[in-house]
Every structure is written in C-alpha cells, then in structure tokens.
View (cartoon, rainbow, N blue to C red):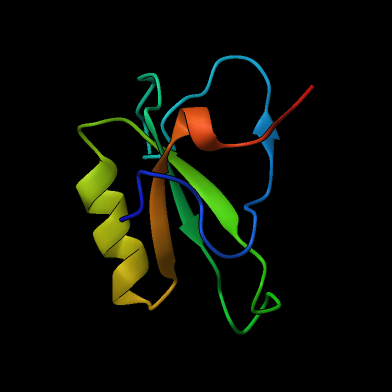
Length: 83
C-alpha cells in the first residue's frame, strides 16, 4: 500500500461528485481507491479503480489480489477526478 503518493502508472480518473463504495449493496462514502489491472484485458500500465469504504476495503483488496489484479491502494483524495 502506498499512501504517500502514487508510484507507477496513473489510475483512471473517477467521476467528480459523491464517491460511493464499489462493494455490492454498499452506499457508504468511499475513502479508498483500489488500483487494479486485469492483464488479459488491459495494457500493463492501465490502472482501473474500485472505490472502497473503510469496512469493505480489505475484502475488495483480497478479492482483487486472489485474481492477481490488485496493484495498490490509495486515499481517494489522491485520485484524479473528471467532471
């Protein structure tokens, strides 16, 4: 986990506005961006983003890691936003 700054490829930007946890059925405010990449679908430098609240962060990291997709977790404040 790199909380001091992003190292490596820049993640996909996330929509501006309210950021909601990506866990199924969760409507909590996201605090974390989980950066991941599916090597069968994405170029090596691509970083997709799932959002996570404190409660679901570990579960979502484990889900991605079990598939060798998880790359890094950062605070949502470090993610680029798009309108």
